[in-house]
Every structure is written in structure tokens, then in C-alpha cells.
Image 1 (tube, rainbow, N blue to C red):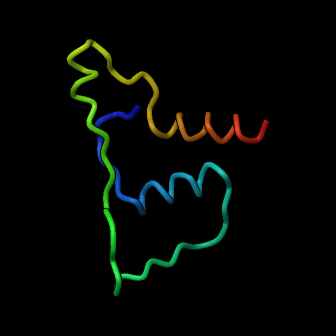
Image 2: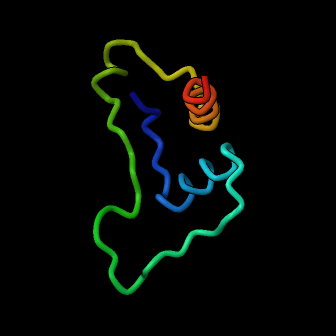
Length: 70
């Protein structure tokens, strides 16, 4: 599932970094960008069925990390 809102890979990585308490830094090789710089899920079919997300991305990442630790 998703929210239908886009997020940059960098912003997603920083969000996960904050949740897990990673103290290092990311290094991106801008000389060789390959792949998608942004990610977004298409939830339009779900919305037509009356569905809408109820958990924000930040909370979902925290919940997933908490689950993984157990």
C-alpha cells in the first residue's frame, strides 16, 4: 500500500536513518545516477473503492522497525 505522495530516495533514506538511529552519512554518486530519483505509489484504484491511507509514512516506518526488532 502507499499514500500516493511522492518522496525522494534521499528523504526516505534520511527518514529511515532517523528512525533507526543511524549516525553515519550517506554518499550519493551523482556522476552515475541510474534508476528512479523519486518513488510514489499509485493508489487511485484503491481510492475509487473508498480506501484511503490511515498511517503516515513516518509512523509506518517506525512501526515496521519496531516489529523487526521484536
